[in-house]
Amino acid sequence: MEAKQESSIITPGVVTMQDPTILILASLADGDKHGYAIMEDIHVFAGIRLGPGTLYGAICRLEQRGWIRAVKSEARRQPYRITAAGSQHLKEQLALLGQVVRTGNRRMREA
Image (cartoon, rainbow, N blue to C red; front, side, top):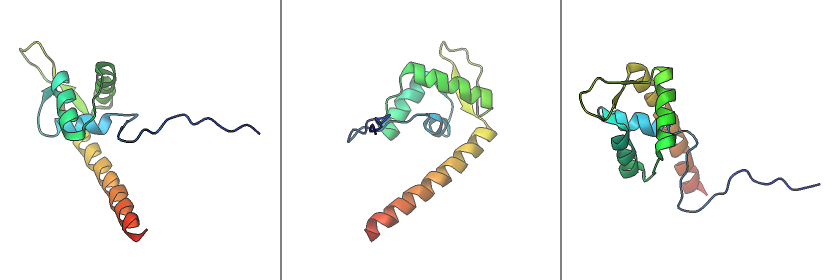
């Protein structure tokens, strides 16, 4: 019987996310931002660098879901705004993540 190859490699000190939805919504939670500003904000608060392809692909999906929308602007760069539905989704996901963090921390103290 052949051993299965792992589909991902875990590297200490490197955090990866398959879906940057929560990061983008969290960035927009404190105000409108254009793409580059979102990337820089995420790097500051999460230490994660999203590439432009990842960011703009996610922005497109978030717009399709109605969680963010483009805002009219005279500037060259296109700003985005979180919607009420996006805020609700972010609150739900943060509550779930909070539960995971609390459980993990409690279990680590018990170990």
